[in-house]
Structure formats: C-alpha cells, structure tokens
Length: 554
Image (tube, rainbow, N blue to C red; front, side):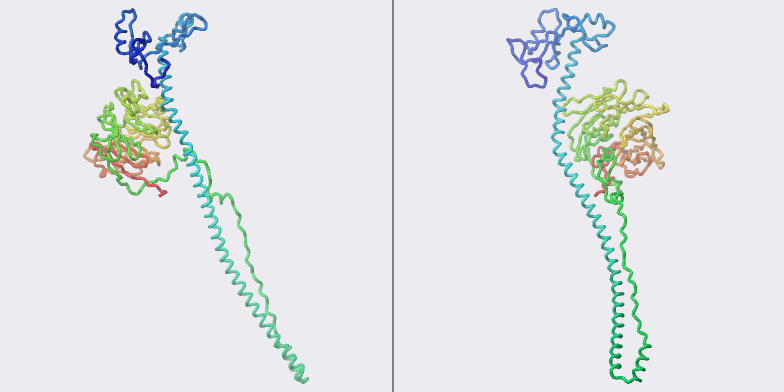
C-alpha cells in the first residue's frame, strides 16, 4: 500500500485486519496504518516504545533495508552529513567518525517527500504546461504561415510599386520622345515642301524650253536662252536631322534592394525595442475605478488592461476589474511598506511579508506558496522582471538597504548595495521597476536611483528645478523606455504633487500630471499591456487610468 502515490484516488484500509476501516492515522514508530478507534487502542498499549502517531499524509515511510557492500551483514542505517551518503555503523566508526550524522529515517523521508513534490509538480504542472505548448504548435504554425503570407503580399505590393514607378518614368520619357518626334517630322515636311516647289519650277522651265525650241526664231531663241541661262535655280539644302538617343542608366541592384526592402529574422531584443508607439499630444482620462474596499491606493500592479491588483497601507490587497468588481482579497503583513506586490510575466501575484521575512506567490487555494526566505533581512519592495522572470526584492537590516536579485525558483543571484566607491546606493527602497534595457529603477528617499542589471550605478534623478521638494513614490517604465515617477510631496503650503516623465538616461521630458491636475498626493503607478498609465492617490480609493501614448500605425 505504501507504494501508492499520494495523488492516487485509493481507499487506504486500517492495518487491523479485524477493522478494515478508513486509515486516517499512521504510527511512525510501528509503521502501521490505523483508523481513529484503533489509534486510541494503539496509544494505550503497554510497551516500552513511545508511539509517534500522525495523520496519514504526514506519515514517515519505512526505509527499505540495504546492506553495506563492505560489511555484507551490516545495514546502512547511519547518514553521514559530511559525505551525504548512508553508511553502516562500522564504516562510520572507521572512516566518518569526525563527521556529523543524521537520523537516516528522517533523511530518507525528507528526500522521499522532495521526490513526491517533484513528482506531483511534474504531473500537475510541468506535463500540462508542456501539453499546452504542444497543442499550441498547430496554431503557431498556422500563424507563422499567415505572417509569412502577409510578407509575401507586402513584397509583391512593393515590387508592383517599383514597377509602377518604372512605368511612370517610361511614360514621362515617351512624352518627351513624342515632342522630339513631332518637331523632327515638322522639319522634314517643310524640307519636303521646298523640294516639291523646286521640282515644280523645273518642270515649268522644261515646258518653256520645249515651246520656244519648236517655233521661235533664231533671234528670239538667242534672247530666250540668254535670259534663261541667267536664272539661278538653287537646289534646296537638306538640313541635317538631330535624332534623339537613349542613354541607359546603370541599374544598381544594391540601391534597388534598399528601395525594395529586405527580409530578415527579427531577434527578440530587436522586437522588444521596436515599437510603433509615441508620446501623444494629449493626456486624457480613459476611466476611473472606485475601490471602496481600500482606504487609499498606495500600490498598483497590472494583470491586463482590464484586471489589476491594488493595496493600501493597512495590508489590504485586492484583485479588481475596471468596474470595481473584486475577485480576490488577501491580507498581508506590510508594516506600512508601499511597493510590496508585483505581477510576474505569467500573471501570478507575488508579495512580501515583513513579519515572516519571506516572499510569497499567491495561489488559487487558501495557502499561498513561500518562494523566498530573506533571513535576517526585512523584505519590503518587490518587482518581477517581464524580461527574464527574475525577482527583485528591496530589503533592509537596521540602517542597511539593498536590492537582491533572485531567479524564478527563488535562488539568490546578486546583491546590489554599494557603488564602485563603496558608498551605499540606497537610503530607503520604496518602489522598484525595471526598464526595457534591464536598468533597475528605484524610488528612494528624495531621489530616483538607477543601476544597470548587474548593479552598476548609472544616475540619480532628484526632481525638476521648478519644484523645491521631491518625494518619489510609485515608479514604472513603458515600452519606449521612459521612466515615470510620482512626486508625492504635499507637506508644505505649496503643493508639488505631480507625475514626471523621464527618458532612459534620467533626463526630464515633461510633467504628465501637474500639481493642478493632482486632486491628492499620487503614490501608485503602473502601465498595463495596452500602454495605459494607472495612477493611485493617497487618501483616495479611486484609481485613474490615463492614455498618454498613441499607436503610429493607426
């Protein structure tokens, strides 16, 4: 029975052959299954052993017996921590006596539990995800064919356009040739007429000669001949005709190819940075979402353009749509930490717990999964990269602040705490975001700090010169590499609350929201998958969605 996996749907009977009821409990001491009634009897048995009875799912499996290869009759019942192998007592005493050892039953069950978890994860998650990938191949193949067909049609249109341009040039050249031809023909007709007139004159002279020669007297003939001989009839000159010539231009295939365009396989990085979006001339409100379940909105994380997570300073975290309909609600330990949740590229919610010093991934069930333990560091702000899935956690330990990069499984990759001069990078980490070039942008105490993906310091932004106070809170980036940050300063008589737009080098571009346009102190920002900007305000339970980019393809 013990070989049946936990995932199997099987009725586990009590080991008492006279009972055969449902096995709800298990004795780790006796390796025996039992129902509730048999459990009471089992615990009352008068034996020298102390029975360790647990629920069946928490049971320890009986370790299979395995003999030592050196001491054939000895059981491998000791686990050497130093060498991480099971050994027999004789081998341990001879070769491992200076090493720590562990209870081999505990080690066996821990490893078995890990195998069961991995086995269950493969069955429930990995294989279904792989099957989804497999099922998507037909659709992806069809999409690829359709996209390539679109490219073929686009190329044909381009070739037709080049043909049209060539025929247009041909038509202009033909028009010019027509003009030249007309001029040449008119000149030739004129010369032909002059020649015809000359021949007519000659014909008349011939007739005169014939008439005079037949009947004229000698004296008259001499006079006629004398007069005619002095007639100067000149042959009309043939004017040379200047015919047109065609001088073909050199066909430069390289230049023609540039005009036509090219086909190439676009890399992921090129596709990521390539965009048809640009800043709009107008900054308009798209929608306002009321969230009465929150006292204020201190942080926003977008799932889609229609779904998002929002939180307040009291640890209330809700999932809502654009109509304010709440689908999930979570209570978290925040201790006033604002940027404490994020949405992964798989659209899973992750959040920090300052009391348990851990990072959790929200699940559909009642118990959320702990993916990171931060030890003696208190986790505060968090961000999940949509480039590589890495998790960035801002944390503190007394006066020390740092950002730690983890992979998707929660393995630590990098600590970002000091610059190249050994100076502290951060005084307070409120919100974290990542730009399209991998830069890590953080709202800090009175400044925005930006480092590279490897933690090398790039620049600090300390606000616009027109505002005497800068208190950055919510921060996010967009598809164009802009950095968008709230100035939540409203402590003085002069209101400086605003939303700043910076380029990827930290240069101020404009105010997206001026102090006059901020009804309250803005402290929450995010950009959704449709490139809309979401803004949440202190002391307001209403989130406002703005349109500030436009698609240049439309």
